[in-house]
Image (cartoon, one colour):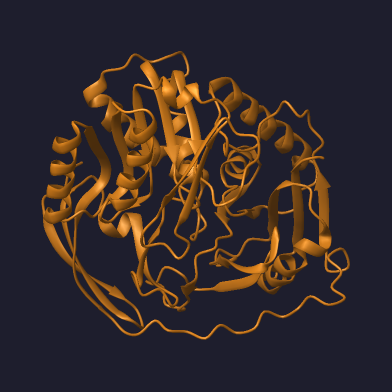
Length: 414
């Protein structure tokens, strides 16, 4: 359903307000997001906290999957693609789907899962990946961590692609999209580009810049979104915060604190992430891995309502497991993004945990809205085996959420 154009002043409890104009939408703003304030970020001090992404706000996996299906259907209104036996759109041309780290990695997976045929998926990353056939770096302008890395295990996936679908949860100015397009065009020009996003906030100046950009370079870039509009007046008080020191988990014993550890030793041929890209066969391999993990973990569970926690860019596989596990399974994930919490029902981040990152003890990471839904069980998903010592800061932080049953799931053995 399309809503007519409207303006809305959205409160950011404890910090101020922001004015939004919605020009085109199939949802109300309140259905898709809450507002929050970024910590110590002068480039953009506010944050749209998505109710769809299962990143900051715990969410049922079907919410993300169905939202991505809506974008795919919007895209197909122009493409008129046939359906396969599983209800996926069959791409007529070679297509590459690109999801942006870290927030939109699972979203990109979910978009890719709407298509079949000669279609591949890769998500950008902030981690170095060895032995890739193709790689470049680009900038995400307003982020707290601006560097984005792009790798592919097969260069022909981008060399021969006719259509590129770029997936990001939100577009504000479109600069990041242009940055990656410029890198692609530098190597392999002449693609057709489609941007899938939940929120398109490009103002008239940004849209005119895109129009001129496309004309100058003879490019075709089309946007597909659930909401399009523009950001108006921003009235937010200072967001400077001095971080409290993270308690050091000296002599912390996870097992003594109720944590159970599960290692899923699977064939190396099964795929767990898309940092170097996956095709449809490898997507099936990832889904088989999710099925196997689900079968193994179903016999270990004791609760009825669970928090399923992914780690960083590793979000989609935990969500596919959550989709199949018994009971109610709400998904979110750790993040590098620093956000100020406020315990107001209309604020996007009510509770914030911070801890030393499991894969880099010198970096702080965060987990938001932990167990606001009163779950009795938690499963923390780790892509590959790491030591209990590396996990201790995260697990000690999660202990404060008072889950009755606690599990760490290592999804791939060494």
